[in-house]
Image (cartoon, rainbow, N blue to C red):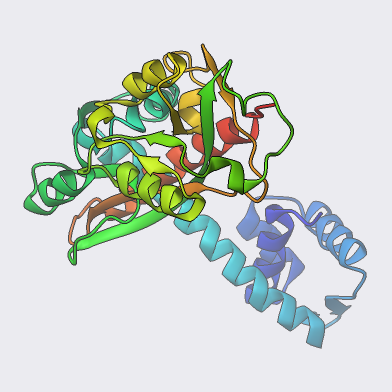
Length: 305
């Protein structure tokens, strides 16, 4: 694969028109630069430079490759600048809002990685209702928000970062547990427990209940995913749980079994949000990228039988 060093040498050669001048600008010997250009030509399978008494002249394809290489190198410089700003800007205390259906099961390992990347950063994490926290973000009482979509606010920048599978679960001795994929009709009339109506999670559970003919039980709404876990494990009904909760040490699958349903493809989209006018928008995008990588790595490792 062509290297960034080879592209830098090629662009410098194009700018100077001379192997001698290009080598001097790149602080390498002329033979070394020539060898790298030749290696790049061999890798790409095309002749990029005509070598003659007049100096180095780009071939037509060479001019095209140089144009593309300039764009690649510019992107790399931008990433290097953002990385430098990461450690410079992400310091002090950052107020991060999240939902209790996500934060406790995702943030712990991510915070450890963030501390390595930005050791001067301190995270003040506040859990709450997603709609309330979006308002707090707009008002400046929070700096960033990690939560399920939709995140509403005309002044907010919303960056979707991953999709999290949602699983239907019941008690280990539920009649549907342990079977192969069951027909959707077998869910008709079954009780589906959820959180209270202020949560996005409730609305998503209500949509699934309507789609599969299940009955929502408002008298048994949970206050957290843990409370739903406990009620369902006792045999009170079925519920929907996010994959990250089920795979976590603080959540888990104790007393539960996945109910496999033909055609089940439920998921929720999770986003990172900040005020569009924030001077730290570039740093927040880097932060969102860190969370995205960590979450996706964890999700790829999850498999429930």
